[in-house]
Amino acid sequence: MEARVVDDRGRGGRLLLPTPLLVAEAVASIPAGKVLTISQLREQLARRFRADSTCPLMTGMFATILAGVVVEDLGQHRKPRWPIWRLVRDDGTLHPKWPLGPLYRATLLRQEGVRLTHRNGHWAAMDTDQS
Image 1 (cartoon, rainbow, N blue to C red):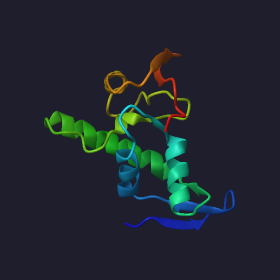
Image 2: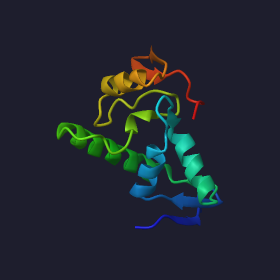
Image 3: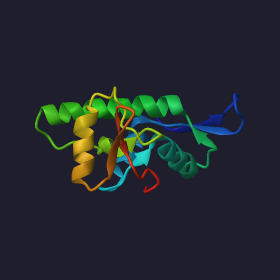
C-alpha cells in the first residue's frame, strides 16, 4: 500500500490518502514531552505530500490500529513500537475509546512532563500547540 494524493471532489483540492506506515512514522517522530493533535498530524502529512489535506477517516482508523498494536506490545512486555499516547484529539483530550486507556496514557504523558488537566470527565493536554 502506498500513499496517494487524489482530487477531493467533496471539498476541492488535493487529498492525501495515508498508509498505516505513514501515520506510524509521523507518530514515532513526536518527541517525548510533546503532544500532537490529530489535525496537526494530518496537516504535517498533507504538507509533506504537497496536498491540501489528509483523509481524516483513514488517519483516525490507522491511529486506532496503532494504539491496539501498542497494547499488544505492552501485554507481551515489549517496548511500544510507537508513542501513540502523544497523539491527542483536536481539543487536547485523550481519546476515551482507544485500546490504550486514557488514564494509562495520561500517566505516560505526565512522566514525560506534559501538563494535563481533567476537563468534562476527560484527561486533556494543556498545551496542544507545543508540537
